[in-house]
Image 1 (cartoon, rainbow, N blue to C red):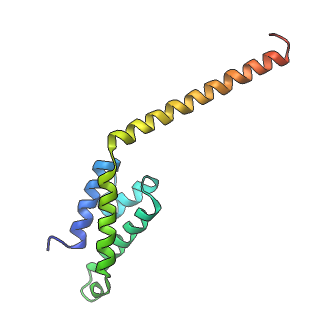
Image 2: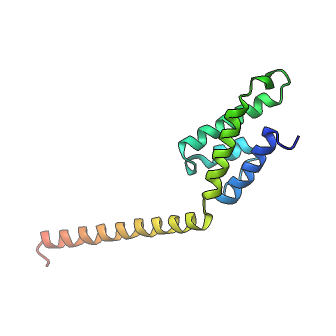
Image 3: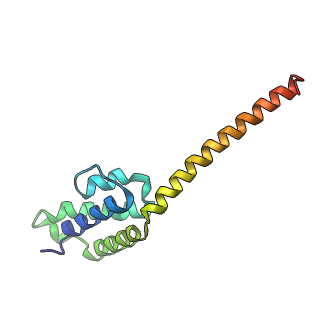
Amino acid sequence: MEHSITYQATQLAELMQARLGVRSGNGFAAKLAKAGRRLPRWARRDGEVIVQAMALETHPKLSRQIDHARVDRAVANLSRHLGEVDPVQRRKAKILDLIAGIAFVVFVTIGLVLGVMIWRGLI
């Protein structure tokens, strides 16, 4: 049964590892929890739909309660989003944010030092 929800979730977990860099965690639910704010809110909700469906899939009678259309839509949305994520661009944006934060702190510090020097009459 290669198109089961568990199989699809495994594929999504591999995509999360490759695209978002979520290395820790064993299985889709753990990787989804570790991804946290790296995923938009709607993607986290879709992930929760998949996790709930995986829990129901293991039980023969409860598996009839799964809304397969909703699960398929959630899998499609999540895989499309993860496919669009560029790990190189994410890394570059993270480095630029770090540099911008450091530059801001340096400029504020220089401004405060100059302000104190003018206030004290040293300049």
